Length: 200
Length: 58
Image (cartoon, rainbow over all chains, first blue to last red; front, side, top):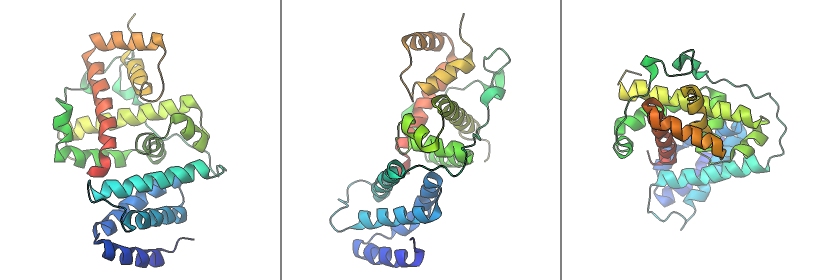
């Protein structure tokens, strides 16, 4: 059972030894991600705890590369293990909550003038922009919960769509629709708030 | 007949999740050659995928 205080005490002890205060700051972000994926706060507490303990185990972190990437890579693997292992018993029906991108298109299925994607320029430039990352994270958070869950399982955990369909008990075509909606919403959010610079 | 842009965006999204059929690939390729809105959208979807891979670093 997850016991937050106990967990944190143990983590703090290890963190002191490893000299990794950064972990504490990451914990909330890790927990939010784990809860989104696992839909179980107690289980999420446990995997985050395990990931932190594993990350801080003596001699594990080589010190090259960012600590955050290292810890999140471990967390992702732990979440994937749980998803793959748990005998599925969906307690709730998966409800599609993404917005239909229909309003970006005219009746004939072509882009509305106001919705047509603009030229964003070189990808390397965008990925090097602090502002882009700020907006990108906010846009990810704006995705509806169930859409975000599928999207992050696919893109962030790197699961195959087949595995996601099994875990959530949805069909292939359902999953394609959800992924399309997620990408279209994310693109539009970036277009408006990053490219056009409209305030969030 | 050129496929509608909405369909093209569905195919570019699906191409990230499954293998498109030969026919779908050709139709999409043709569409992207003549529609700059969709060509940009395709690039941007690829950029978003790359960005998520790098998300942990930011």
